[in-house]
Length: 565
Image: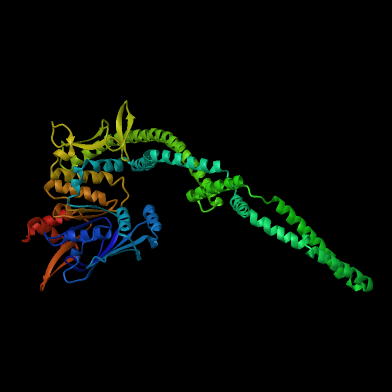
């Protein structure tokens, strides 16, 4: 419930702090006193639209703060999800408007978004403004009221969730279908590239080996000449290395006979001789193998050109080209599997369509049952509101095909399924005997709409768990006995909820448990709006004023006391 409302520099309110009571609270006052300003301020902290024009003239900021108390588990869980746990069930909501649009919102002392305030506000207060009954002129609002009454909102939410999943799958399939041509072209390209690389039969070390062989073939003559000179120096020429090293070893052998200490050096000399011999043998073998082969050189040049062509397309070297090939193969596999995914999606969508059709049918049947029950309840309430011959009904139109939504079978015909359910729903109304039921939006007058909405609010109060309701002058255009009946209806609601009602009718004001008067005063050149809680005597005077005007007589006072009694 709403415990306290504090307002500073908002419209004509300079500073105001009001404590509210449980049950039926009524706000009265002369026309233009600012009664609706209080409701506007409350609407602001509940996430309503902020308007800098609401800041009191001459001030830079306006502040509205409301204190609520609740023990509702859903509301407390919502606050916890927002990181704004309610200590002892207390919820403090605050909005600060500033010139220049630097507006701020707070929830239990922490910064909050306006969207979060609205989510919390929807759990705390139901505000029924002067023109809210006009929503009945829009048939799309009728399904919400019916689902609230029939307690089928959870079924609808589950349908909407399943429908959203279906749409996501359908969009995925559509994207795949739109990209089918590109996919096929990409597949062809990847297949060609993979085949081209595979056909080359590349080896990671091949290029360097071919470049080395090409270099040897190009310089075969120089290699032979140089090797011949080296072999001559090592073993062929007179005084060659081997000849001189052999003579040196003979001398060392003779010296070792004299001094055995030279045995180590003599052995090293023999080793060096054998190493030079082995080196010469290897160089002879290499020299015999070196020959200029033009055909082999041409083969190598062709192979290197093939490799360079692949490198220009796919990478800087053979390992990079081979890595590109593996990547392309993986992509090709993915494209092939996407086709399989498309077929799988088609089957999945068929199954989902069947499931959605079943959910929609089950929801439609529950709604039809709720519609029949709502008809009885609404007509009873309307009779009590002075509309003795009024009839109420709900039309379920399943003939609709085409347009947005999914076409599904229902009762041997095709109808449209949307996230809201099957077909279309519209309330029907007949205010007078002998008249057929027709769309409520077309035939009901403003006063009739207001009473139909009040009847529905009264009925729905049993279904919703919002702890507070606000009626902002919904009694416009009624009076007499009907006004008294409206007052009884609101008082009945107040037995289970905290109710606020702005009214001009003394019949309604007299039934309130707590009465506030909204007063506009002019001090100097400034206008100030105040809210005063009335005691019994003040209530009598206020209701007498509402009944008989500013001139209060003993008769109007007695009448006022009777109304309160």
